[in-house]
Amino acid sequence: MKKFITFILLIIFSHASYAQLFSKEKVKNRAFWDKKPLTYGYYLGFNSLDFKFQYKTNVHKDILVKSSTGFNVGLIGNLRLTDYLDLRFEPGLSFTTRTLTYPESYTTPTDDFTETSNSERIVKSTYVYLPLLLKINTKRINNFKPFLLAGASTAINLSSNEKSLDDNSAGKFRMTSNTNFLELGFGIDLYLPYFKFTPSIRGVFGQGNELVKDKDSNSPWTGNISKMQTRGFFINFTVQ
Image 1 (cartoon, rainbow, N blue to C red):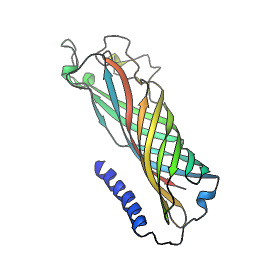
Image 2 (tube, one colour; image 1 turned 90 degrees about the vertical axis):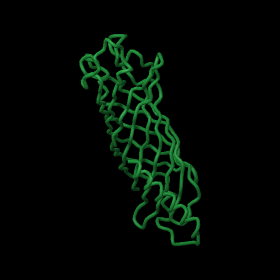
Image 3 (cartoon, helix red, strand yellow; image 1 turned 135 degrees about the vertical axis):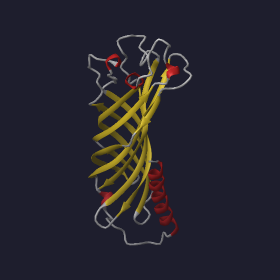
Image 4 (tube, one colour; image 1 turned 30 degrees about the vertical axis):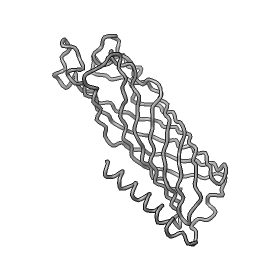
């Protein structure tokens, strides 16, 4: 995944550098596309999400989070505000899996965490993802235009288990069904002859506490956690 991200960043920066170095006026593809007040598109992409934990008392070792590469798909509605500012709504679905591993030092001696069924929790999430973003554009350079993204989003986790009567004592890890994020990223619009292609990358930072506590206040899985928040990044490829 790291090699893939590096490859994408190299593409973005190489295109931007090329445009700046060879800025002689060229025939512009889709020259009037950005003058439209409202445009639409779709995106496909990848994500890598993990959890940030805050504890009630200090621990020798944190809960380990292993992230896997997830998948994003959705639609885009883009409202032109000015030549350099757009308002963008990107409803979609995001799928991700995170594996939590509790180290032995995290639990009390009376807890049996030698078995994987106790020390490991696989957390699968399916988010209905609803971001509202401000797109801050630079001046278009021939057929390239870098931009920044900033905004907020809300997501409904269809796999949260929030209303489940079972908890970790029965092997069920529970999260809140609603999550809010702050987002910050960048990308580059590439104007091709028949459409606009846009690779972008952005970080997502969960707000609030997403953990639903176990019924037992001294639960070894949730008792010492004061806050759990999603964080990570999205890489999306947009076609408009």
